[in-house]
Image 1 (cartoon, rainbow, N blue to C red):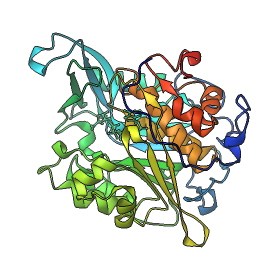
Image 2 (cartoon, rainbow, N blue to C red; image 1 turned 180 degrees about the horizontal axis):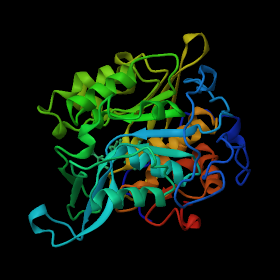
Image 3 (cartoon, rainbow, N blue to C red; image 1 turned 120 degrees about the horizontal axis):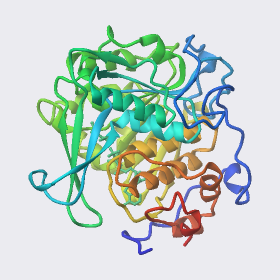
Image 4 (cartoon, rainbow, N blue to C red; image 1 turned 180 degrees about the vertical axis):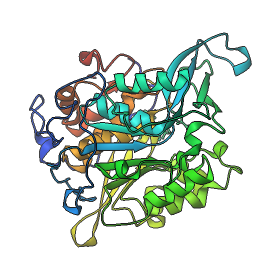
Length: 412
Ligand SMILES: Nc1ncnc2c1ncn2[C@@H]1O[C@H](COP(=O)(O)OP(=O)(O)OP(=O)(O)O)[C@@H](O)[C@H]1O
Ligand SMILES: O=C(O)C(=O)C[C@H](O)[C@H](O)CO
């Protein structure tokens, strides 16, 4: 399969113990609470027990290190909060006015993360609001079919479910436009008063994104509440997801997103996004200098890879850079969500930071090589085998459409 971008530079990431494992070595045991639907390998509607308790501080994974094993019943691995939308994918290239038909799918950054994590075998829950309309019903059915727990979702009888349309140009590395119809949606009515806050604490990781902050004043208040530092919250994961078109003025979001990111434990941001939103053009180190608060900061650099800054014992900062594999993209939307899901999955499994980055890249490649938002991950054993490749073999890895279903085609 021809590569679409130049060979990434030789990796400098140091293999951790898990990386030294021979291909095919079973993955370390998962740390998901026993009895979750994902633990049983279920792919159908989630049947996780109702969230019952707030995790004690000792249940919260150490932000900078390997997460503690949680034994608390009813605790999700990850809760994702945000707006999920029915998504319409174009039947062909061209501007919106010329696309004759669309294929219905689902999207929404945070529910994309929940889907990828559920498909990866984790107990994932999505919390949000949808309309009491057919699109809301479809979203809940589709998310449940991915294995996502949707029992905390509120149906709003007065506001519609948000939708968005995609258009694509006709190049293989197509840029995709996103057109939203979501103003006044059910999700925009989220606030500290309308969302079940206890459900957002009954988890090892709470994953949020900057999109939610742009939806309404109530949503912004909710985000500020959740991003306030406190000792009794789960590990707080935050994807900056700057969407200038959702803010009243394109610049309005920048300071808010920086403020929210400063309250998180784990932050994902694109190098280009940091430049656009915050004017930081000095690369990952400059972004870290401007954002020292999160224990883990992951800077995504597209085809060039990703860099993680991790505050370790003694307040020292470790830096890990891992190049991305060579990918033949089909559609770029959702790659960032998939990256976050891969990184979070590996974090929950207690893998070393370079492996978390590799699993992020592999999951992103899964999203890049399908038309829709949601990444269907490769089987875990196969992802572990690829993530354990030596630096040279990793640098030669080429992933194109269909690679998650036909693993033998992924090798260089
Ligand atoms: N051309 C590429 N080749 C290989 N991997 C890529 C490429 N582009 C993106 N990726 C992978 O996808 C990840 C996310 O990319 P990017 O930051 O561009 O997404 P994003 O803009 O956050 O996506 P979205 O917000 O639509 O989910 C990268 O960190 C990398 O792992
Ligand atoms: O942009 C948004 O608000 C969305 O949630 C739509 C897409 O699903 C999202 O951009 C993918 O990351």
